[in-house]
Each structure stands twice: as structure tokens, then as C-alpha cells.
Amino acid sequence: MSMSLKKLHIIILFISVVSLVSAYFVEYIMALAGCHLCIYQRFPYLLLIMISIIGLSSNQSLRQYYIITFLISILLASYHTGIERGIFEVSIFCKPLVSISDNLSVSDFKNILYNEKLGTCNKPVLFILGLSMAEWNLFLNIMLLFSTTLIKIKQD
Image (spheres, rainbow, N blue to C red):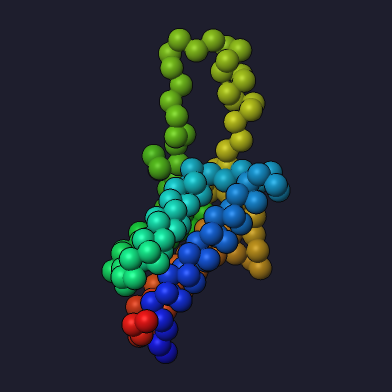
């Protein structure tokens, strides 16, 4: 299969935007809080958006950057899926992104505790067709990695 360079960038940009919008929809509209690994898994999509925009504006392939980003995303999603399935123990990556200072008052601590909506890494909040969002993310990135690696790019 061959594809134009511009089309490749647009498809990856579209998939990345839809993936992020879906994650934010689940978190803010459906009020299902993700865990810290869920948040970390969004960063590769932000990177893919930046790579796509650079690729569209410079007319360069940037395939190697896509592949590296997909591999990072696959590692994150595999690790998260392993924690959800009980293969790996919950680790430091599932700890809060912020630390609580020693001089925090009890009322401030209660406010943080009751108002902070965080999921736990080993308990998925949403299943779609029997798969967690981390598993869907893993599947999507494996498909993107294979398709980006295997397609031939036609120069515009």
C-alpha cells in the first residue's frame, strides 16, 4: 500500500486528536477519572500532534519520529495493561503527580482528598467491548506502528 506524505500526517493528526478528545470526554463529561498512567498515556498523542503539524508544514517524512513515539506509547500501554491484569505490581508510576507539603492543614488535606478525582492504575473505570481503555490504546498503537512501518510513502 502506498500513501502520500501529506495524507500520512493528516491521518496520524486526526487519530491523535480523536484519541485525546475521547480520553477527555470520558474524564470530564462521563466523570470517570483516569489514573496517573492514563494521564501519562496522553503525552505520546500530544507529541504525535506536534510531529504531524511539523511534518505538514515542512513536507518531511518524520516516519522515524512516529515509530519512536508509537513504541513509547506501546510500552506505556503494555505496562498499564499488565498492571490492570495483575501481571505487574502497582509501582511508583501510579503515585500522585503532586506532593503534599508537611505544613498542610487538616481542612486543606480533606479538601484535596475529597475534591481530587483520581482513578487507580489496577482498576479500569471503563470497558468497551470487554477491553479497558489502556488495552484499546495498546491495540491502536500497535496498528499505527505496523501501518506506519509497512506503507510506502509517495512523494507529493
